[in-house]
Length: 391
Image 1 (tube, rainbow, N blue to C red):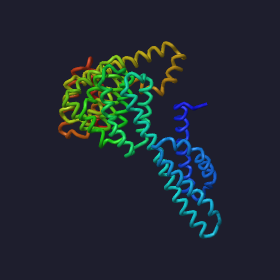
Image 2: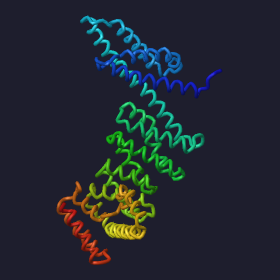
Image 3: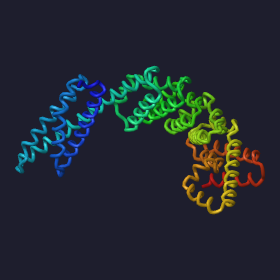
Image 4: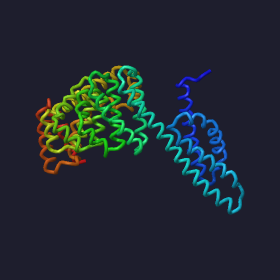
């Protein structure tokens, strides 16, 4: 019975993965003289016999086939020098080194083949809006992100740039007709690209509409990615946010009904505070940040007090519940002390001068007093801010 192309593809994929692993095993057995390479050699020779037919069907694998032949020749030579004379030991060392180099080359070449196939599949899947469904697009985006997380690879970067992958991702991110699920995954892929190589992809992020699209989406994932980009890009991105008047929009997200969006916005605010120039800090304060943080902290405190009262009324059952949730306390109280966190981050910031920090701190204290609902609240938060700044 004839095999379908899908079956052939699966067979080829499995074979290449096995060859890649076998090449790693050969590298290890070649480096460490104390290791017995026989099992690795036997596995490799067994795979080599099965691989020739599959590799010959794909012209893109011609180099892999050549490397395989070279490796087989070296392995056969190694088996001829199994004695303990100085000549045999010397020859084995030379051949082991050659096996290591060729095995490295094979591993790299197979990975390059996988990368070419994956990038082509990524582009085809994302650009075709009819043939591929949402699940498939999300799947290839996740696989792409995982590949980027393995670390920098110049060849893989060249594939990405030649295929214009960033432009495709940027288009999808800005396409409001795309589902939020796809756009969220696209945003994660863009963050992974920046982490992969800041020198290349930071410029593309700053020159395009990526940042503004993330803020416009205002999903918990997009705001989390924005926070990551602020951490990666730092001062240049904060400057862009201030120049395009995006900071007030981030402040407004603190009023979202979705707690995860509020938390993401808070992370962005702390990043802006740390890397922002005086214009960015002024924009946040003028947008009512201190007042919003006061309100969030007040609500947090009230929720904690209500929760404690409820737990006391419910007795032992609630006590057990509190114990089980103790590890999640910080997650359940994300805005506890948020005014102080903002002030401390301002004090620790990289960009502001000491004079600017002092002036902003006085303005923050003034706004805390004005926004407080009681003298007790004002005194408590002012003390926290002053103590936090001194710590």
